[in-house]
Length: 519
Image (cartoon, rainbow, N blue to C red; front, side, top):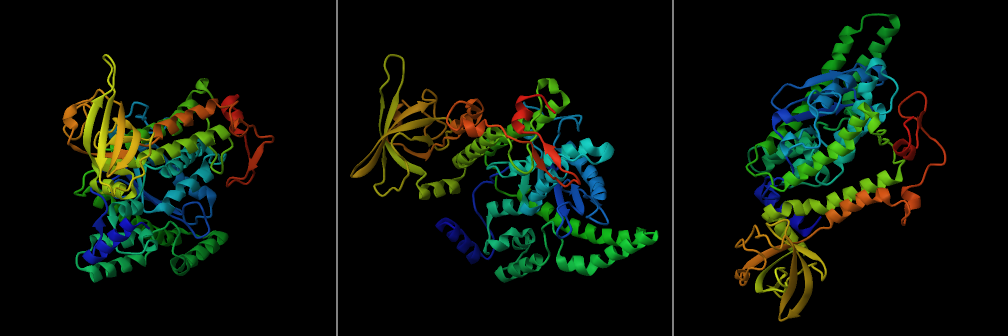
């Protein structure tokens, strides 16, 4: 925990309530009609869901459950119902009349909200269960599509700046500082107890502790499962052996599951309402994060579904839920996630004062006064050079040869020529990015405009996200370069994996899957 986080938590404790972490929200909050809230429950020791609740905020959720979560075919039936809704909601090719394509607008974003990170992990379990299953009869194609989509949702949720899957408890922690230990802040009910209860610190703390007693994770409370469900499950098993009617005992099981699903779903809905109705604006930089997220959805999910419809465009590459079998795909994805990490803060820092103050404290941003402006260009060319004076005690991580961006004017950038200390700290920079365009900050002049002399201006360290993105594309063509043996190697043998089926599935080597004819 950083000093800034400690200070925030102490302020929250002093105020007796959660306090805002930043001056803006750092992720999109889609409209209710574009938001699907999802909650799962499962039996202890099982990976497949025992029940699923889904629906839009302000509406009643659809709830589907099975009497026994260990029966694969029964679970597949509720997965089909949920899959139809999820595929339609996210506008996936072949499963909607209005699929989302490459030219999508940020307003086209569809989100899935879940109570916490363990519910996010359930998408990985659905990927395991259904993306490559051969069971399901007439519904096998839909189950495969659900598994592929769930796999993409899980993988993308781990990328900085992802916008499609929102972990509600994480979203609240990013928006507010709570006067509580980190471990307790993983519980959505606990966070909402602090946020939604009126009164002083003891009153809010008591409400949070009461809410904390009820589990939010997909796994059922062992005590509840033992006391209220073990008996009906055993009774149902005996009735089935006798060939007797089981409707009443199945209704008893369903009532318990429905109550648990509704509670988890309502908590997530409350978290959505808190952020959707916040007085704080969404950071303008989120539009760029949404644009990237929509591009990821198209290239990593939708384009593959399109190839399945028309394989004349090439065989679709379906990532395996267990591991990477294609070195180039793995390397490319790794680099793209690195680029997202690098770009995330710089997308938001231009419009969030608190985030900028954090960057100042970390040395990733500076604030100084322009001492001199010269133009070293020849003829009609321009090469603006600034000398900037900083306070002598300024702590910074700016380095000669590095790049800095004027805060509030993303797109402009300058290279750091020299850093000298002569009484005061002086930095000489040469403008390169958009050097003939007026800055969108300060006096709004062009970099070569001498009226900048005497003006105060802030800069943030530039990131190398664009370079890393280009590397993520170039890795595909690096067959003969360093590391080519790793990224372009071929598996010597076929790989067998048992993915929730009775018999192993043969996993075609993904180099073959991409580069040769489909099998």
